[in-house]
Length: 255
Image (cartoon, rainbow, N blue to C red; front, side, top):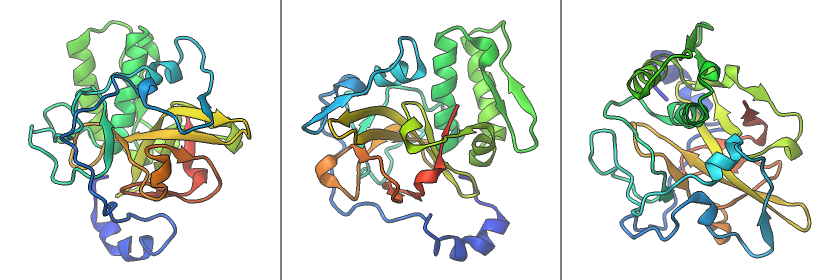
C-alpha cells in the first residue's frame, strides 16, 4: 500500500472503477470496549449458520483458533492509538513490530508465515518480490532469525508480488479459510479469511481481517454494508465492500 508517482497520475481513473477506496462507515463503534470473545471461533454466528469443517492442523483451523486481544483498540507500530477506531470488530493478538513495515499484504504474509513456523515447516516459508526473487527462511532458524527474515520480506514484498505468488481459485465454492482477497497495486490492498460458515441453503459467510497503512494491529473488520450480519460477509458474486476497500469477488486467491 505504498504510493508512487505513477499511481498519483492514474488514481483519479482508478477510483472511478469498481475497485476503489471507500469512506469508513459513519456509525461509530467504540473500540475501547472490552472484547468478550477470546478467539476467532468464539465470535457468534448469525442464526441458521454453522461453521464449515476444516482439517486438523490446517491453516484454516489455526486461523479459526487465533486468539483475540481483550481490548478493541487498534494501535500503530509506534504504540500510538490509530485515529480512526470505527472499522474493527476485534483485534488479533499478534505483533505488528516497531517499524512501519507490516501493512496490508505484510499482515497476510505474517499470518501465513507464523502458521508454517508453528508447524516447523520452515522450508515452506518462501515469499517472492516483484522481480521474482525468492526470500527463503531456510531449515535452521530461531525466533530472532525469523523476525529479521519477516522484516526483510515486508520491505521487498507487497500486494503486487503476493498477488502473483498466490494461486487462482476455480469457483466460488472453492473459497475457504486462509484464502486472500487481494488487489495488487500502489496503492493496493489485501485481506484474509479468518473463518467461514454455511447455512442449510449452502449460502456461505466469512470473516475478514486486515492490516493497514501505517503499520497497525491486525484486526477483524466490520461489514459496512450489511450491519445486520456484522462482522460476517456473505459470499456472492457481487463487489465486496469493506471498510477501506471495494474488491471484485474474482480477487480471491489461495496459497
